[in-house]
Structure formats: structure tokens, C-alpha cells
Length: 223
Image (tube, rainbow, N blue to C red; front, side):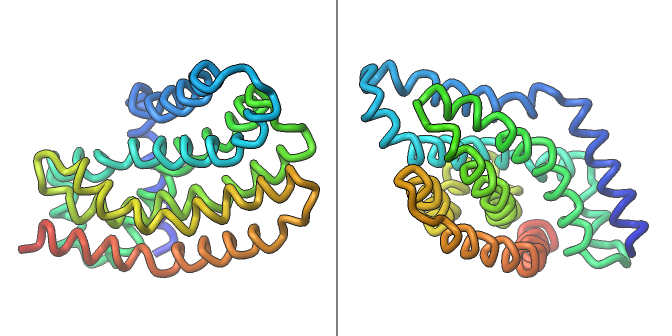
């Protein structure tokens, strides 16, 4: 089973590397939102610094959501999903490899890009470590929860809006904890509580979400 997981993980990474435009779209969206925000609210440094945690996390959330609409669509079009359903290998293991490869190419890139954009909003350097750690714990949760919605809407021609309606309410705890951690660090308060809760959510999502994704694919395709 470990060999199958590794082989599928490497396959997904190779496929993603062949579609660089799809990988760049969330990063460009994330960068544009952060770059345009100071132009909209003005150059007041204190205001930008106070709003930076929420802006960064909302932009990251929407960027991850943008990348999830077509997560399983290419596999549906080439028949891979039907083969997964008919395979003797556990479907949760297969979808977990795909989602982790997707997060490695998109979510991890957001984590690496966030400090540079945070400096544009006036976030002090002392808060950057908390920002990166919160995103490192939170973006896998966003990807796994979003994959559940993507699995349920994979058979729909225009499922992007329905995906957002299904998933955004589930994103709210991650958004509150992630922005709260950065806000606490900005005020000189301990952020360990927020980060521990994010770690708990990440563990729960990593454990339970693959089964929900597999069930969603079975409902969408297995009928």
C-alpha cells in the first residue's frame, strides 16, 4: 500500500508540473489581492498592519479555493476516477496521495510567498514565523476540506459556485484560528493556543477527510 501511495504521489506531481499555468493561478491571485489592497484602503501603515492578518488569511483561503475546482476534473475526463473506484486499493489512500501532491505544489508555495507579501502590508518581521506556521498548519485543512466539495461537484459542468457554498462555512474555524494566531503575535501575545487548535484540525482533516472524499467520489461517479 505504501508503494502504491508513493507511485501515485509521484505521478500526480509529474502531472502538475506539466501544467504550470494551473499552479501559478492561485499564486498570482494571492499576490494580486495583497498588492491591490493597500491601493484600496490607503497608505496608512498602522491601518494596513492591523488588517494584515485577516487580509492575508482571506486571500490565502480564496486562492486555495480557486485551485480546487478542477482537482478531479481531468481524472474524470480521462477515466482515471472510474479506475480508482474499480481498483482493489483503498480509495481513501489514492485520493490522499492526490490531495497531498496538490497541496505540495500550491499550498506550500503560498506559505513560502506569504512572508514577502506580509512585509508589503507592514507586518513586523517578528510575526512572520507565526504567519508561516499558521499557514503551514491551516492550508492542508483547506485543501482536504475543499477536496471533499470538489469530489461532490466533480460531475457538474459548472460546480465552482456550489463548491464555494459547500466549503466556505467549513473554512470559517480555520480562518478565525489562523488570523487570530497572527493577530496575537502582532500584539505581542502568545499564539500557541491558536496554533495548537490548527494542529488538531489538521490532524482530524488528515485522518477523516480522505474517507469523506472517497465517499463523495463514489456518490458522484459510482451511481
